Image (cartoon, rainbow, N blue to C red; front, side):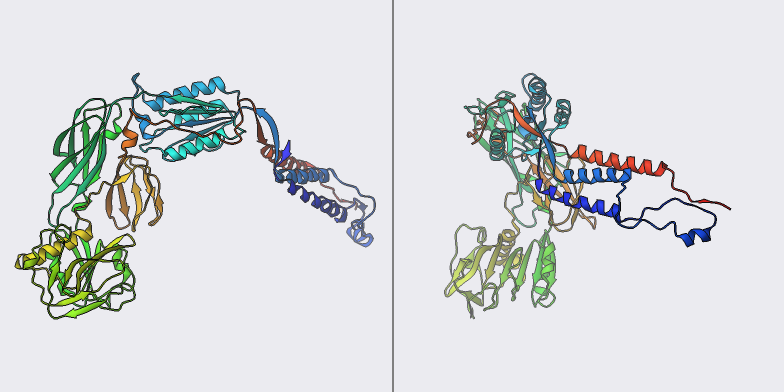
Length: 603
C-alpha cells in the first residue's frame, strides 16, 4: 500500500482546529424552572465557559473520522498487488475490411481470435484496449474484467482509413517496454518481424490476396465556359497476372462514362474520361470485383463546374463588367475606396487594376499595371508609350495558344526584377508579365491591361486573358478530393457537416474537423442554406496492396521485462470516498432522529 501524494498528509494539521471548535462552543444545560422570569434571572441557560473538563459527544468522533478520511483521500492511497494486466491492440484500419478465404472479414476474424486469447491468457487482471486507425488510441481506461473488455472489443468497427505505420510501431514499442504490462496481444493483417518482443502475442489474420484498386479519382475543367469535365482514374493491379480493369462512372445516379485498361501485374494505369456530363456527385466503380470492396469505389464532386467568383477592384469598374460575358464567371466589382479584405472571403481570385492591396491577399490574384513603390509588393516599373515584346515561353499555361506576334499592346509599363516573381513574358526594357507564389497563393502581374475582355474582337488578347483566369482559378488542375483519416479546416460559413452515413456534426468555421473516417460524400451546410459537397476517398495504394505487406519492425525497448507477473496499482480513493459519504449520511440520520433537549416548565 502507498500514497500517490504523501504531501497531502500535512492537512492533518487542521484536526486540532476541530477539537478547539468543540471546546469553544457553548453547551446548554437542562433545568426545571417555575417561570420564564426566574429562568432569565438565574441565567441557567448560560453556556459553560471555555475550558474545564472536555466532554465530547459522539458526533465529534464521527466528524473527526470524516476529516481524517478526507485527508487520506487527498493523499491518493493505492494498494499494490500482483497481477497480469493485458494490453490489446486490434487493427481496425481499412485493409481489415478485406474478406478472408473462410468468408468473414479480417476484422471479424481478428475479434474472435482476440477474445479467445483473452479468455485463455487472462487471470482476471485489467485489460486495456487500443485501436490503430486513423491514429492509435485507447478505448477509455482499463477494463477490470475480461468480459467487459470483450464487450468493448465487439463494439469496435473498422474504419475506411489506413493506419499510421510509424505511430503503430511507436505504440507497440512503448507497450513492450512497459514493465507494468504482463501481456500484449496484437491482432492485425500485418506481421511482426523477428525477433518478437517479449510478452507480445501476435495474431495475424487473412492471407495475401489479389486486389484491384482505384488509386485516385481526379476531375478537372480545362477552360472557362466548358460545362463538361475531364476525369482521370489511376487504377492498380495487385495480382500475379495481367488484368483488364474496367471503370464505370455515374453522375447523380446515371452512367456518364465507361472505359477500360489492360494492366500488368503490380502496375498502376491511368483511365481517362475526356467528356463527362455535368453532375453534382460522381461515383467510380472498378471491375472485376475482389475481396476488398472499399478501394473498388471512389467519389468526386462536380464543384469545378460552379462559377468562379472573381473580385475586380479598380478605379474603372466598367473594365471588369466585360468578364460577365465569359461562361462560368461570377463577378463582383469594387472601387479601391470601397474595397475591404473581407470581400475576399467569398472570392476564388482577385483582380487589382491600377491598384494594389495593403497586404498580400489570401487568394490568387492578378495585378494589372501595378503602381510603383508600394511596401507590399515593391514593384519597380517604368512607363512606356510603346511596348515591344521580345520573349515568351513556347509551352506554359499562361501563354498556351497565344499568338504573341498578333498581340497588339500599344502602351503600358515594364516591370523590373522582382524578389520572388519571375518574368514569363519579356519586353525590350523589362518584364511584361511576371508570376510567382507567395504564402501558398499564385500571383501574376502584367505591365499591360488585358481588359476589357473583347472576345473574338481581339482574339490573341482574349486567349491570354482566359489563360490568366484559368491559371489563377486552378482550372485544368487535377483535384482528387480528400483522404480518409486526414483532418481538414472547416471553411468559413459552415456550421454543420453531414457525413456519408448521415450523421450530423455541428462545427465552428476555422476549427479542425477530424471525423473523416468514412469514405464518400460529405455535405458542408452553412447558416444561409448554402450547401457544398466534398469527396473523401481511401485513395491509398499502400493499403490496397494486400499481397506485399511489409512487416512491423519493433526495436527492443529499454527496460522491457521478460514475461511473468507484474505489479499493479489499484486506487483506494473510491473506497475512501464511499466511506466518507456513508459516515455523513449516518450522522445526518442519527442527529435527525435523536430527541432534542427540552425545557421543562412548572406552573
